[in-house]
Image (cartoon, rainbow, N blue to C red; front, side, top):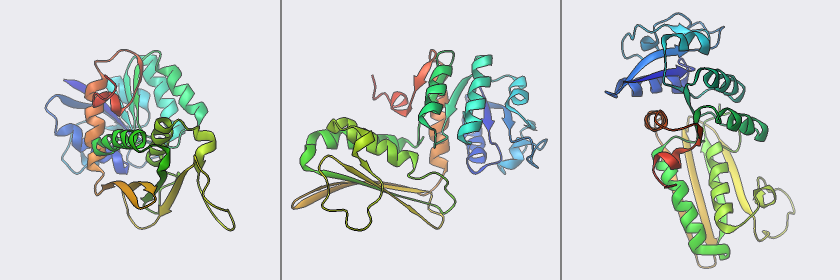
Length: 269
């Protein structure tokens, strides 16, 4: 049995991850935790997911939650919290799946440092469908070449804090890599006023916010006379949770290192 611990157990993703774990015969929930000030501390983690009791109380810290033993922690929280959790996992030799987005370059480097001691899987989107989209975008960009201009549009709910989404940025990075472009100079995040004609070798990334949209991403390849659109629409957060559990199953058998969902799907082999 794979012993799993869930960070942010009372959040939008935490409860779905708990449900996803419970649906797997080879997993068991041994820990769950929330922020120390959370009113959910001490409650049965199973009740947070509305799936019945688990007899696992919600702890006030990752250290308390790991006291019951764990092979992997699944973390969809916030960048600063995820960094603390990575340090705690590295100290205890516990694998870590990170679905948090909004990391700075320095924070990513810090996570990579912890990955020298434990296996860490970090992905801006745990959806299997989105990760297949990453692969399709890379292949399309290479096949179509620079004659086709790339634009990316994402839509998320009004409460999303980071913009553009981590998924949109990763799609732009994938396209830039396939086209041999430098992300630092190629990405265009907004256009307003007399900006002139579209510059060659750029990739537009636009973010829309509103309603309760879980996440829509479209990559446009635009040329004279035609355009290709690759779109993924998420209608439930459950697909992210299922992807995270699939990632955890993959990760517990890996050596220390930094992994992503492309590894889980076998695209890097």
